[in-house]
Length: 155
Image 1 (cartoon, rainbow, N blue to C red):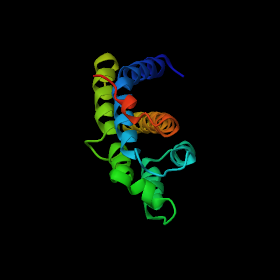
Image 2 (spheres, one colour):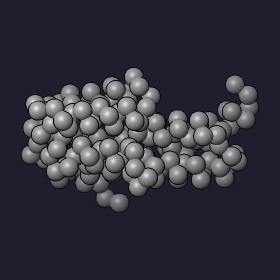
Image 3 (spheres, rainbow, N blue to C red):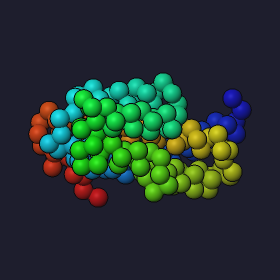
Image 4 (cartoon, rainbow, N blue to C red):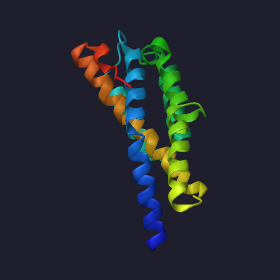
């Protein structure tokens, strides 16, 4: 790994760390949609597993759509628009992943200059995995404790 790659990676990592509070807040807010849903503990974890294995946001979104369509799990994913909301967060330009990726891009470019499209795809993927991981944690907490309102994070 050459010195410029190391500098770029460090700049990207630092910028990603700076946006984690917003990612956690969004994951908590989205998990709160599941209050009253009958979702199994492993369902969000399964989405995270797909993300880990596929390295593709489109594959993750397709898996969530599959869950939405299944008769035995679809109702939980449909509850309060939860599944479509998660897809929006990872795929849409106004979702948390795209918004924070833009923030990361801007901060890293200020430090190191232009960043390749492949690196930005990696940042989007990493942010999506973080979002899904925090979503899983928040759902698990809310589901186990019933204290969904405690997921609100002060801004």
